[in-house]
Length: 68
Image (cartoon, rainbow, N blue to C red; front, top):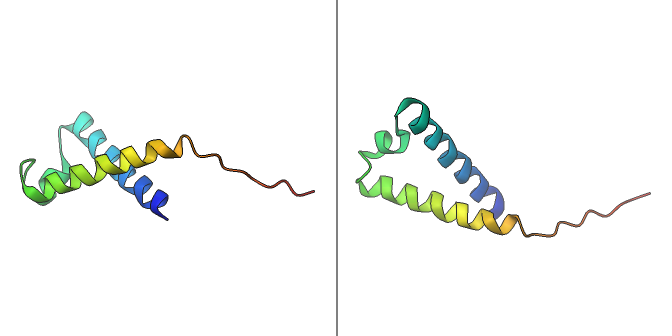
């Protein structure tokens, strides 16, 4: 469950960075009162922590049982 939450937050962060890169529009800053607003900073930190968590997903060994 934590993996899925982290992935969703990472997708939200990626979409926000896409908006910044393409249109120069920061949706998080717009929603929460600017880039220096405490709520915006909290969102940025939570997304960053999600990204760090998702690094661990690269090293998980998912074993799928083959049924025949």
